[in-house]
Length: 203
Length: 203
DNA sequence: TAAATTTGCTGAACAGTGTTTATAAAACAA
DNA sequence: TTGTTTTATAAACACTGTTCAGCAAATTTA
Image 1 (tube, rainbow over the protein chains, first blue to last red):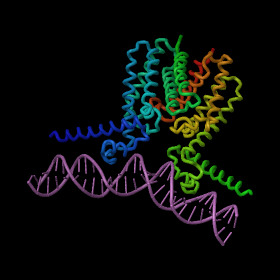
Image 2 (cartoon, helix red, strand yellow; image 1 turned 180 degrees about the horizontal axis):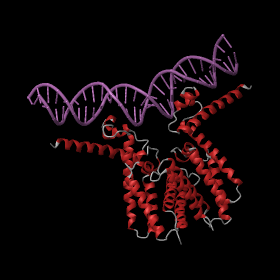
Image 3 (spheres, each protein chain N blue to C red; image 1 turned 90 degrees about the vertical axis):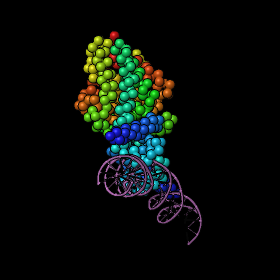
């Protein structure tokens, strides 16, 4: 009988509807500011209905968190067209910061917000996050192996660059660069990336 | 008449009492998790009373924010005993990370939490924050001037190091290093600092 | 087809949040 | 003592995430 199949399909469609509207609101207004009630209003259902499709707000967080890394990975993988690993690394830095400033609320969700990260640790959710990091790490390895960087620990370099990039992005997003003007921050970021990749390069 | 003076004193004492208890709770439980009602409970006054001494929760945020930088600046300034600027810089990095991991909730308040930063931009509050940054920036300048670093823009180097340090601290505090174990993160942080200050050094 | 059961949904409630306001009481001034 | 100012609070407002009893429609069973 096809009824249970149609029911399953309808269930999936409803979940998608909730998720689509929730994601839109999360991106526009941020995770904290988006309430279950406001999502319910938008899809014209009662708040309680949402709890028939998601255990709680955390579950929605994890789905959107992963979707963010999906989008990010897609952008990041475009740099694989660049043959020269050091140029690719530079391009990846550009992709990273562009993503952060084009979708600050997504970035917030993915890298800043406090959330129970146990699931992610267990590898249950975060496939694209891990893939993104591995892709980045592989480029770092290639840079070292081909002699574009001094022979250093791959993980130390990857860890350092990620920290550096996230530091700039998150301090900017959370407005902790108030000792500089916006224009200065922009130029300092460009200068910093050039300097960092400059000193790491094996010339 | 000394009555108005005593009243002023009592007002200040009450403000201090609220602030003392609030700070303790903020440090222990975090800013978001500490409610006005729970502070009121602890000092055995009604929640409304707190609003006679503070405009809103934001005002308490700013005071505690500045107090955090006061504590931080005090620790940072101890490194002024170190004559060699590059060694001092290294020591400042150590002070920074120690502060972040010893007082993660304070660090959260000072560097991560989303808050209206307009006051800080206007220099009304954030004296110790600015002083901390200037102190750090001066050491970077000294390193460059005395030839311990390659002749680079002081601000680019200061901006880069701050971003790098904050990146490590905040990713660790918000548990975004789940691709590594805790022990690995510890060693990677040490290795990263050594590598970073190594490549920046003018040898 | 009629009755029984399952499914999908919601209004109302619970326990919590920051904040405001009317009111009462205490302290001070005349 | 009366009038004024200061101080404190209970109660309410408008929110938040979440749960649950109950209703109505869809589906299955008799």
